[in-house]
Amino acid sequence: MIDTDAVIIGAGPCGLFQVFELGLLGLSAQLVDSIRQPGGQCTELYPDKPIYDIPGIPVCSAEELIEALLKQIEPFNYGMHLGEEVSVVRQNDDDSFYIETSAGVEFHAKAVVIAGGVGSFQPRLIRATGAEDFANKTLHYRVQDPKQFTGKKLVILGGGDSALDWVLKLVKIAGHITLVHRRDEYRAVPASVDKMRKLVADGKIDVIENAKAKAIEGVDGMVSSITIQPREGEPVDVPADHVLVFFGLAPKLGPVAEWGLDINRKTINVDTEKFETSEPGIYAIGDISHYPGKKKLILCGFHEAALAAFAIKKRIEPDKKVHLQYTTTSPIMHKRLGLTE
Image 1: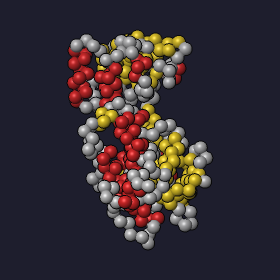
Image 2: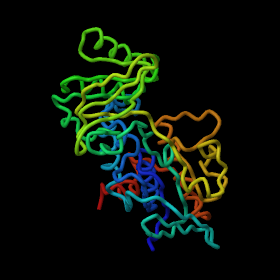
Image 3: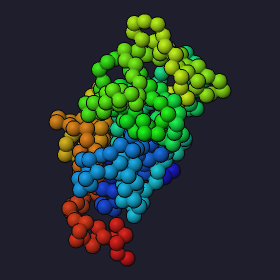
Image 4: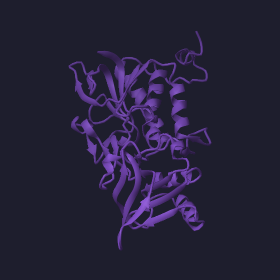
């Protein structure tokens, strides 16, 4: 049994910053995430994608943001449990919580913070004959090592930001790229669509629109071609060394949906003073939280984490006034940050 002040469900940017805000108030935390590395969607979906709206940082990649957040929480007492899902949350008679993960790790906590983004999410799978024979080999739902595509023939499926972002990035190193989209309208930002159209006009990539993948061929997990079925006309066989699938994510709240919280579709209703859910002692921040005027931005999640931390401090020490202290001048803050002995 691990005793802690708070268990944070989700190790994305908001979950990591929640550790920092709790640490400044002298509170300990344990992070749990179903993904096997910290960073949430920033790590899982777009590690190389630039972010421009983090205060004080003109531009950084998603991966750089996560690295900075991990560096920021180094002074504090926290644990991280990755590749695990919270399966049990039960309130004790003293209003503390018993939490258990799918790996059997048990916690005793005074508060729970849900920072699970869109919840436990899995990529939407391709429905093409033979696809399962190539998954995690030459059929990819995420890009971990772009260098493996150097000089290769790629077929990229999808019409959103992820699909076009990787087209624009990989065109610099791939031997050839064919983009396949089931419509002729794209969900990606217009600037990316314009850049993709120019690549087509310049003969640098091929695009097949109003079509979908029908079958994938190859041997021993190595793709050799993919059959594309246009909405009209005969199927087309496209040579390929790798197939990249970006159909988006299927968000699932998972066990969270069974905890008796006030669910608003696939988000959780909270108040805007404490970011507490309908269950006292359980808080929600980041994309999974909902309230009037909610904006799904990382910087908003950081604000929510700060207010939730003060609410948790008040819950744990109800008889003490929680003073706002500034990290620039407070000796207590400097000590907690490891700046003084």
